[in-house]
Length: 228
Image (cartoon, one colour):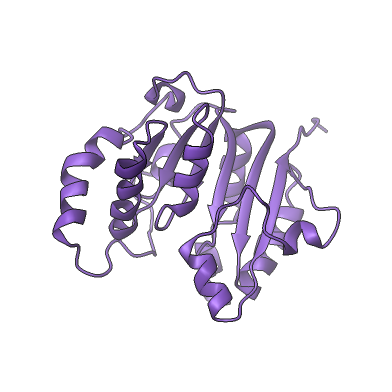
């Protein structure tokens, strides 16, 4: 993986308040994932049963909920947007979360140093849609990223995604269905049209529903591919 990678998202939004600045300065170091981590499971002291990664956790609602509901597991959240990181740190503080760690940057800078089959699953909730054709290389579902995800996720593990954008739904499905390392688990329309009970609501989901956009929920299973 190259040391420099183009990044197209936001690093900062509105000006951070004093509380948010304090959380970033005082609390983030305790949750921070070090550079070039080689054994992500060893970042945790609870001997986690399973290890998950959430890419682009936004305000942290989903990550906080799954971490709270499953203290036996461990979760790494990646989010370059500092306003989102500070929002998630509030959950960490209020819920005294011990089974989460944070990478406040582009996750691609970490993944090449992680060992194969170290993750039980990856969550990607409401990624940037990048609907224009000229921006297709910026979409998170691309050949290079899927190769990295397939290497990291154990056979039987999951890649879970959600989107409310029609274009993003199309490129998520087309990219995933062309990839031999993942099977779409859906058997009926409700499997992608109805929010699963264990997928917490996020601010992006609430915004989508308020504006009349219907989210879709995708669950893909990592499968074993026999050599040809």
